[in-house]
Image 1 (cartoon, rainbow, N blue to C red):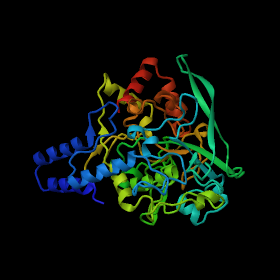
Image 2 (image 1 turned 180 degrees about the vertical axis):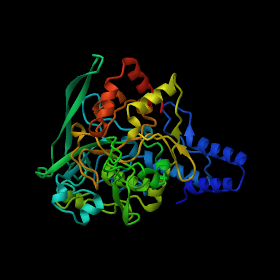
Image 3 (image 1 turned 180 degrees about the horizontal axis):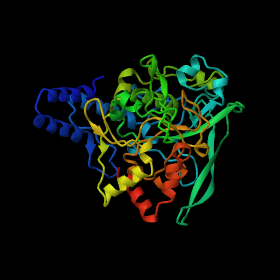
Image 4 (image 1 turned 120 degrees about the vertical axis):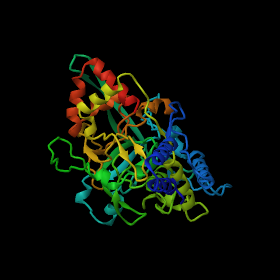
Length: 458
């Protein structure tokens, strides 16, 4: 697949043979191509600049497969059949509205399709540490697989319906002001394939925003690994850990950079994984239908006419589209420098690393170290994935977080969307992040507002 990277590298190499006066404009052009000043509903929807005709065509093709619904096979269409047999959504944008983040529940309190239930066996490390564990990073629930499907095609019963209830948790800031959080409890009703395994674990994961993924993929692995401190040798209370995950693309273990558990090493892998789990689409990376041995109707359902529902070229096109979205530029605010210093003073940058320079010379500020951190028992999802433990999550990037509501209409935060605001997300921080949470709680009201405004413009 032709990518932007060779084009950007070519520009950079050309700059390397020139003087400083020539180099600076080309670096500025690189930034101009990758950032957008847009802060409205389409802030996450613009293609990076500088594409040639072939790349533009690929972006448009990937966009079409990202947005237009897939249908049940067999059908009159030759390119979009193969949905399911079990699935949750029939298009990518169901979970990523306008390429933004998902939300947890609708106005009726029902779980949205952008909040999926990952299923695995608890204590899997004691059950089987063989090839299945190596390839998927966890042991799927034997009757329902690795993710609950809430829909099925005409002849195939759906798997079950997730439900959530929230319990209010009251708290108080250091200055006496009170706050309320919502603690979720999940269950699955209407199970159509028998009861869940006694050791089944239900882990709710919400869809992440798609901006900047191509740039994250181009960060040198050593620049991420230099922040790793598994044994907290510097005694700062932060012990970031890399997740090493199996890649079916390279057939070896790679650094995980994407998803809540850092379980995906590349945009293409993550795209194919979502196609398999969310829409039941086969790809060269996930060639099997998403049916377990006990799901008779699923196994007997008609397949699409091609060997893969999404052949390599279409998968590459969607991955290219996702990798080629512009990053919203940081917006200005009053006292921004003071706010940034406050962000650092209470320890946020211990995990939310401010900036990197990618392999092609692009300066980015994702505010993440892309490592796993213990976030405390209250946030535990019970899910192990490769080296990620039940309490451990990848630090989510903060860029664009203040635009989630503008882009998607609503905004939820944390792995299960329990937080209705960035403020609530901070107040849920535990484990390694507990000292920063306590420092936030003891700021003055004005300082808290300043800090939240700062995160909102990143």
